[in-house]
Length: 424
Length: 131
Image (cartoon, rainbow over all chains, first blue to last red; front, side, top):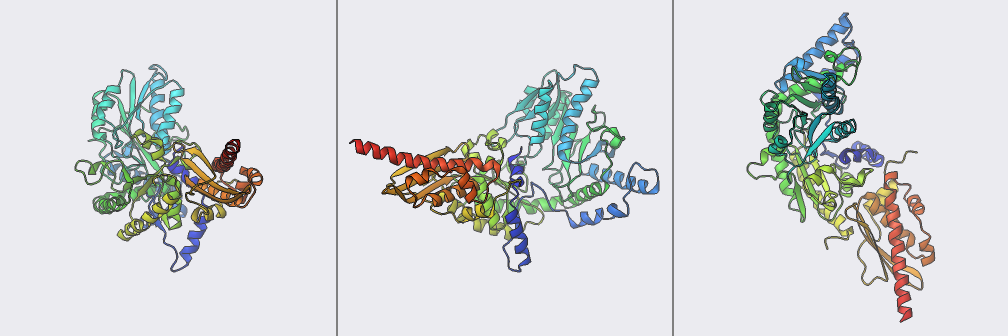
């Protein structure tokens, strides 16, 4: 399980009710959201676009009558919009229910297609990295149990995959390379264009999990030699419950959900039209506003990083800020730190009590005691990886929010260090 | 009840922990945990006439680790050593109004630290008596 996500399982109902109560008080505690990498609120324009598809235009896209056709038209229009954001063709977009499903389909679907072609059963080889999202990691682990060989490529201290390592790892029986585009925890942007080129020249399918980068930085599946790409709606101010898998024309893949022939036979399930329409609207807005929003976020992020690093014994994780050549290697909205001598969850909850919602990569919140696999992969010691804090910005983040965070964080760190046996 | 959230009491102790800090010349010290696992507790006691007169701790860890440290020191303060040795993790969890199941190990850690500090005191005393 992803510790970052798992933290949210911990309910924290008291503070939720506290926050809701505070909202009612005019001068109540601030409530600032700094966890856009986890999920985003639905944009008002998206919500408005979805509205008619709940009650008026509620038809099933597989129905032949006018209700069905109305829904079908909306679905296909949405497909065009989503395809347009990554320079794909509409028939190359398969809508799914979540990025986890898309990633499962990409990996399992390619392996299953291989078997149905009678080329050696499950005895195939897949290359992933050590820093994938758990839904890739776990799918690969499961496939490994079925007999698929898996290579997990290591990364450097910034979380970067070296394309040459991918090249070296490709074997005769390699059928798929899957490398995450941008890291959910530390924001590193991988050189996927170079990896795509290598895969293309070796005739190996290339899949990328682009959940964190899609809609935030430009993606061109054609130029980047991408065969399969996963994207999700709720990370870009669309609703939860809609995602997609881009599958390049000609890629051999089998469905994992068999059913009524929806999504070109690749994903049986009644189409979730309201969510898909919302997803498409979210894509449309991202395309229009990406450039301006990216510049705004980079400015805020760099101010945040600079401010936080003023704290003694604080460390930036992932690509450094302000160093030429590395700026474009970090997502515009991500900052990840670790603070010596204090544990991440404590920091997150103390911040929450001050009305600031951030996230941790700390393991203390997960059932397992191991810290984040990403932070260990970039070379942090376990005792350092326990001290991590992820701050992710988004559309509602204002400069005054950054100022507030920079103002309250030093005292919280100081107070927790007073309790800690270390660093004195 | 599926207890996967922090109780009000846990948050109270976490927000305003009692008895934290280092102790000068403690009579007994209990150090438990491992930074690699993300929880470390150093617990210090001062003993007078077999009663825990003062108790302090330093903790590196999550919300549960800090609040269990706080509550176990509250429970032990002013107690005789025999009474303090009877404090178990159930008692700690109960005093906190419950703990998420995956955090139970934190209450064990706090109890272990207390036991270790008391045993440290007792063995020091034994050695002194031998002299």
